[in-house]
Length: 112
Length: 114
Image (cartoon, rainbow over all chains, first blue to last red):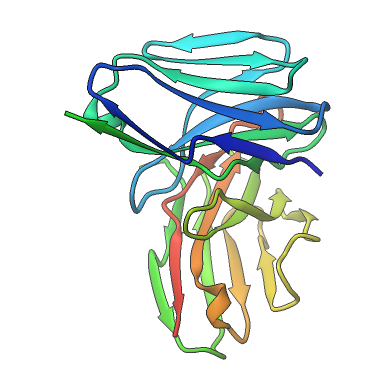
């Protein structure tokens, strides 16, 4: 089955800095890669996603890049703000499946 | 509120008791998923439904776990004879058939087994 590794487990940045979270996946058939943000006591919230036919996608301060050959994808947050502090999860879904495999999460702390 | 809702938000029970959780998906979504999340981990898939059909249940954690979606709308997850290791957050998500399979999560039910 699919295996998703996520790094780092904790990321601490100053407000205004950029943050990068990296994930690798094992199943070359995976073709859908969502990213979720989870705040304390809440369920995960989808913030951006990318399909395997696209190399990069951007939405305001967040962007995701995908390298199919290397089987890794990354989340980039620019101009971080304290409200960006949360746990971020990457996931990979194999083609024909509706079941994502999640990484273990990255706790992002943005210091004012 | 048109998001996914879950009830209860918190449940404390004694070992050996049965518990049941409810999930109401977004109304036009025909797929519904259950996940378990333990501290420091990502959501772990348990089972999913398309309409009232349970299409994947081999990843339910044991035969003490069961789920239903009798009319293709809300769903229930039942855990029988709870154990302390069942303590976790139980998340429900829903999605529309086709497209990106974008899943929307509910707030979760936090289960504590004493």
